[in-house]
Length: 277
Ligand SMILES: Nc1ncnc2c1ncn2[C@@H]1O[C@H](COP(=O)(O)OP(=O)(O)O)[C@@H](O)[C@H]1O
Ligand SMILES: [Mg+2]
Image (tube, protein in one colour):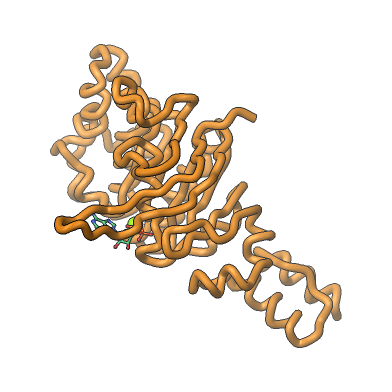
């Protein structure tokens, strides 16, 4: 499979005046393949957002290289090309709205890319359908629920036709229903081939990922399939993370001497318990 984002020995520090600096990320090696669903987990300040900003060339590494679709983000002349391929959705949907009518809001980013008018009209309808919000096209975004607003924010990015979609804690401000709506949209886009990088605090959102990265103090301390990562209790504890409920219970049973396999979902756990009985 083709690599879409490759990082080799990447370091980034935030400089303040008088020679002081804070490490954002360090020693980062990673390779994200086209079409993967990748989840980044880690405590506040562990470097997740810094990594995301390195992915789209918003930040450039102090050491090492970030290669997006074969282009090094240090190639200044091609930064626009990279930014148009890597779309980012942030935490607060209200800060991402620019227009008072939804269709104008969706068109804004694509207009800035210099896309031709008829093409924009097509893209707006397509993007709104993709997030299930087409019927709201002529409405104002301000009366929508949090989940709906975040779907509009995703549609605005989609209208720019990114190949890679990054969501940086984009479900953090939503209620469980809104979170579910947004995740469904993201999963469906991934099902159609879009590479997705999801940054989240919710362990349950990592369960269906292709690959999970665990960050701690600016470094990747573990990665693998969700089963591998949540089976490695040591890294989870080091990163001060929770586990999905089913993984935690399976782990507790194991500690009590029961022969259960690692579990990710309640269904898997139920099967393991039935097997024991
Ligand atoms: N603009 C900034 N200026 C200085 N330090 C920053 C800035 N943004 C982040 N940091 C620091 O970089 C580290 C990583 O932060 P961040 O990437 O935002 O982590 P996360 O997204 O996992 O919460 C933290 O120590 C944080 O305080
Ligand atoms: Mg962050």
